[in-house]
Length: 285
Image (cartoon, rainbow, N blue to C red; front, side, top):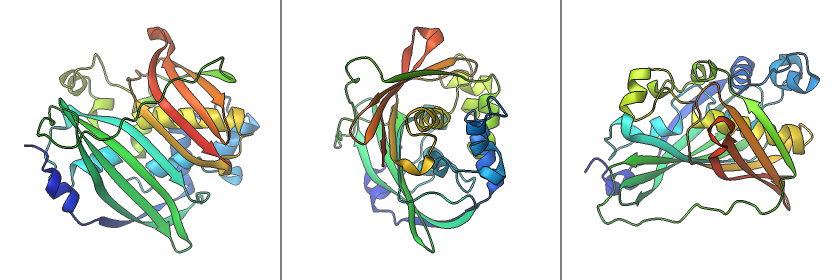
């Protein structure tokens, strides 16, 4: 079996140190489409170091190391082909606003391995803290095709119904043709997002956009339209990746206000508004 659930769960936490600078934050913001229009005061909060605010989803790439999906595949008890791997979901809890520059200690471990029959799902949890205390906790759901069927626990259902009624806000964001090539400079060099031959081997017509890029685009849309542009109001952000995005497409982001949260659904306009992010929630203060 390519995944030894017992070994993966019993492995000790992996610790490390990461650092980032304002340059890393600026690159991340550009990677998720900030800076259009370039002189817009709202966009300069993301693109000009003298006014810089850190979108909390930057935590998923802070330090420039491997993203959660790749990190999970290097854990004990996990030996799978990268072409069979998909990012199934992501959650992030911000314990306090992220500094523009910093150094943190991270602790990562696999906290669950679920048997979905045709596939296995790994849950990788990473926690980051600096000298002032906890900064963030994030979880990546790693979907491994063909790795299930050993009779393990199926795990909880992450599905949430699409909110009823008309969205409170709907915006559209165009993904640039080179968006994935830019975003991969933040640390995720998975060839799925750049190499047509690798993408074909994984079953896709062409390279796809990073799920975490779409994740960041959606969070920025919520902050900019419903949270007065204030990144410090974000408490958590969770989503399921239910479809791929191809560079060059247009994302339609629909948002529903709730009590202390915003529910979000993201679709690809050119493919009949097919859903690419579902079960998405941004909790805020």
